[in-house]
Image 1 (cartoon, rainbow, N blue to C red):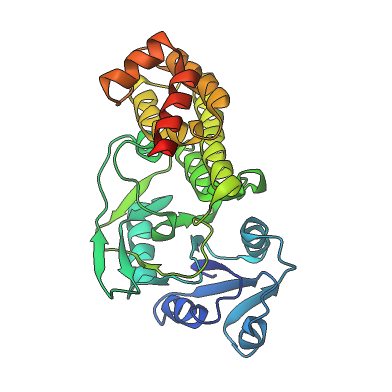
Image 2: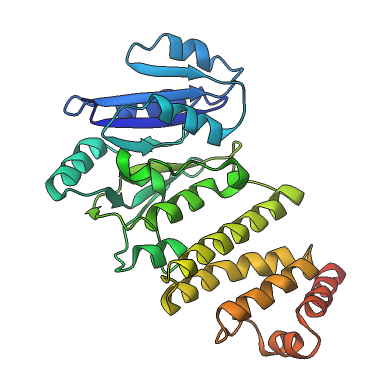
Length: 307
């Protein structure tokens, strides 16, 4: 039986993909590497065809979410890991986390990771932060790491797709849905992978309408998840606080372009968490109370443009 399936979606990253793939290979664990080439035109498919220990799949550039779902249809591992093709696993991560999962009967092994800045050559380790409420942590209470650092039991994530409707924040929604299944956790105290910061294209880098759509997607995910938690009787005050703390910067940024829509979100936050006090200057809070959220944000935007 295959121990771990590593899912790697890729598009025009032949410059980094070989390192990502090499980092997944293991002599001590049975690792299946599933790479989906999402219509690359840089020679990626030719390179994949020359590899003998990879499950290589070619798709027609429908995006990361469909690539991941296509890979999961082929995955046969007891556990699953997701890895971007411009990142790589640290030494022995698969073996160490597999052993942890088996020793503890965990559904999910969590860990921190290492940031690597390609331009400066500097690295920084982001250690895992313990939290006794995994849902609150994923909602925004403290730091929740990155899901490429995690090892998922395949049965845990069955029925939780990478949802195309929320593609700009798909991994955030995925992790919130995972957290709502209350998995048994094991903690790997070593950094699990290296997140490469580079000047190339990444899904996280957006501008203009796409940037605003990203904020709206983030907010929509939280409204959906909080609604589900409320229906289940699991929306505690602690979780409300964590969610609002995470959402507020997105609401403020979204308000620069869409103050009326952001005002509706502000009213929703007040209904959700009546004790909420915006972490803003007193003058801004007074403006919200006297002029309303939308008008205050319009005036603040005018001040920015006049500088």
